[in-house]
Image (cartoon, rainbow, N blue to C red):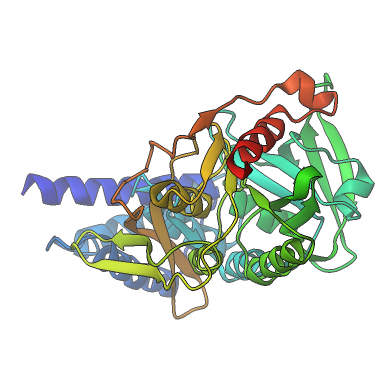
Length: 408
């Protein structure tokens, strides 16, 4: 019985958080009914245990009382939809999982565009700095509005069109930045070299993310950087890999530094171009159901391989890095990865909204659970910031040194 009470309290605590975060005051009766239906659906998805429904008569009465109280005392008028969305967001916050989120229809559209790699935006990659509480720009794409406007890597996105982005995840922030083609957005950034925040106006344009970059280095060493794993990444990597082979590649460096992850299917497709026959990764949900992703080994890499990682290499990046390390087909150079060893799934609702829920844990081919642990490198080397600013990437130089030894 204690478990049931705690579940209910946590659930409604989350709703209260959502209501507070939304800062709204009214909810029509039809809205209350719809909220309740979705809450019940969410609870069935979230927990296997048989618990008493929180959407009983007493909670319905409390919701009505809250509505009346807000309508009577709250100091301004706002849209009912904000209260409804806030309630849904609160439900997900009650799970105490930073990766489980509620998406409105518009936010879901933005998410889908992000994973496709084609969107109307500004042309910058971002990642959440959990310690700072703000999303940080990790890379500005060459020739895009972001570069033209003066945005820089390592800028913290403080505000978007005047809205404070503190505590917002990267999906939310990206959704606010994207918009109609040729429209403008004001991004306020915090930059280490500036005393005050900077307001930067950027025009949105059609962006096809160049998620892969290729270069042939000295001594027939090929260098392929994967920025993130989007729908477009598989073909981009395949093109770079084929070109490297045509250019006489005798060794390969894959750079996964600051790659936040992306699509599971994409990273598995890329792994199938490199790994021997066997498991790529497997997942297990709370019921013990196991799902395996495998490689037939027909395209196993035939030249020495080095993979560069750092503490911002996460999720799908760690699947590739973990598999390379487990099979011993290459060496990892850099620093330990982020440690995100869990899988999320987007579940659509009937009204066009959706929830993203953490649904399973993933394991490397040898059965390692790297969540909150990460994948450690074979050769550890921290980035020397001073050298990097002077134009010398000491981690890349070490990767070249390690690869040269493997090529002998």
